[in-house]
Length: 157
Image (cartoon, rainbow, N blue to C red; front, side, top):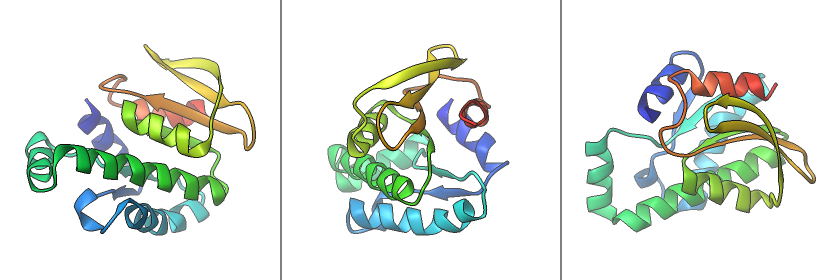
């Protein structure tokens, strides 16, 4: 489902692949993704940054670099990207993946969330309590319909 959700967004918004083997470390990965996303953000466009790939591509990455190492690099890359985005003024984030969501909220220092309306079964919009105020959607696994990301962005407006 996540691959279908990514494809749905790619057809409607600029998209950037966060490719874990394209950078020396997670910080370089985050910086590269932020640099690519910044022009879209500055133009007021929503942008998709994703790391989802077909199972055979994921298996090859894991074989070459190790399952844990790749997972950690992607999670840390998204955490670093989220910090850069928030420092740049972004206040709406949709994060997919349970471990990635955890890495992002930890990096942003989010300690509590106010639960908002349900977007799809099991996935609400939330508001981070504290400063800066952030509207967040945190989705794990294969939750949500094919147009979930579009609906999530709309729910955060």
